[in-house]
Length: 240
Image (cartoon, rainbow, N blue to C red):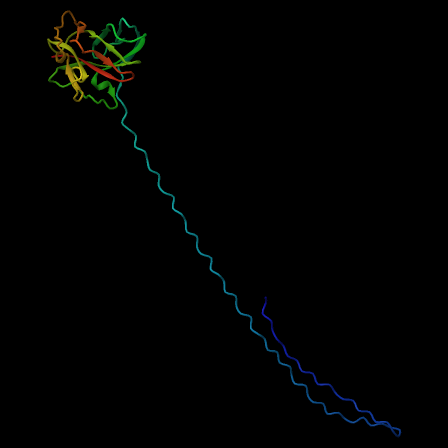
């Protein structure tokens, strides 16, 4: 409600007296009482008090948290080939020379219930990109000629080691063979590492006529060459 102003006004009336008689009449003079000036008393209107509008507080936007990118797996860029491997075995070879060498592997009978795909990729050490967990072949084993990455589409066990043939114009030594990255022996436990094939009782061979061949080797009873589905199995061909 708006504030109300109270104004007071006072009025005084003039009396009129009339006398009758004779031929005339007298109108007595009237002494008026001066009317006081009316004064108005205004009730002041209070000033409105503004309610301050609080300043808005901005909610900070949190900075995003970046998800670290894991290291990429090793990729053998020299080449790759996939073959269908039967329960009786199969062979797979490099379709192009790397570092002046070509190679082929022959696998024998296995415990697969049906044919499965086997993929072999190859590269020199400098042609391996990404994170290569095994690292370079130790010089205590020999000088690596080529590295192979073998992957099977199903978990399979072979009763013998693969036969290996390598061809080239020259070799860095007079004793050659292959090394594998893993744990030597059956049920022995331990951490995977590079092992020469001599660790499982196979003998190295001497190159002759521009090539060397390591025949398939029968393992002691209870031992197999096992490939887990989709898992990389690394082999290094070497001489010393």
